[in-house]
Length: 165
Image 1: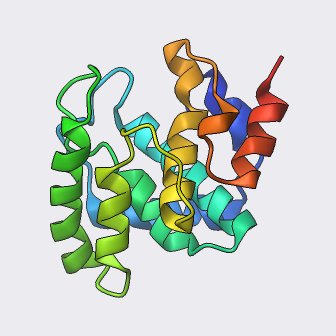
Image 2: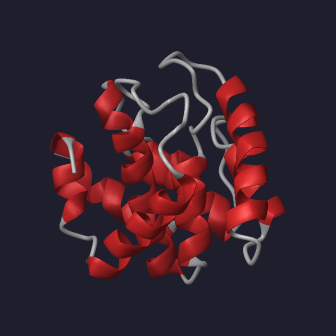
């Protein structure tokens, strides 16, 4: 993977998660508006998908659902700016992708997690928690320190604690 942050997380990902990501990426394709963005491009989608899968695997959530949510969470992002419009656009696009390629997954749960991932909330929902926490754990790439009080899962809080220098 790419970037200093990814090299720290990379050691946690076994072959199972990386193979799942390759399968998800093969089905979803690469033709997303965000694909070439500097901060929110394909490397970010991959990183969040893997972290989401790891968090899910450690907390008893559905790994495939968490990884698909992670891979699609910024898919319709058009720039690296702030706001949550991209989350709503990505949720709409994810709905069609999920219905076509992942009909066995809970489309409503995944799309709601994607829709709200930029709202600065915490949740008890295991899929949303895995996605939101994975995305927040990557904030260091933007120069932000991860706020543990905005992490939804115990797994992510432990990872953030380990990331403190």
